[in-house]
Image 1 (cartoon, rainbow, N blue to C red):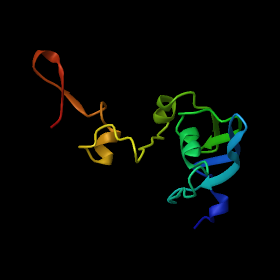
Image 2 (cartoon, rainbow, N blue to C red; image 1 turned 90 degrees about the horizontal axis):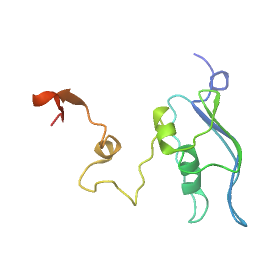
Image 3 (cartoon, helix red, strand yellow; image 1 turned 120 degrees about the vertical axis):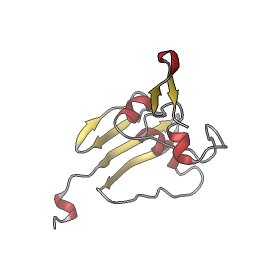
Length: 125
């Protein structure tokens, strides 16, 4: 078995910083997430949790630092760029559709489709 320190992290930040004027929301955050691990982001209100998640998912651009995905430096200019590389976020207070579960909200608008009548694509039910 390979020791954890011999593996490349799936997701890593080095010195991540995000400021909003004179307020520093993320202050040189470093972390490594390895294959098979689960990472919980917890803290007080205003501690920078949302800013960190938004930086990781492309919703905001950090002022300093690096984000590495599978050991490669990435720069997300939008959530679509992060999504293309497999990073998505479900926010607890802003569901796209409250009637759908988390997984269905993640795939909303990207459901599997098959050709139907008149060569239109119809969603699977």
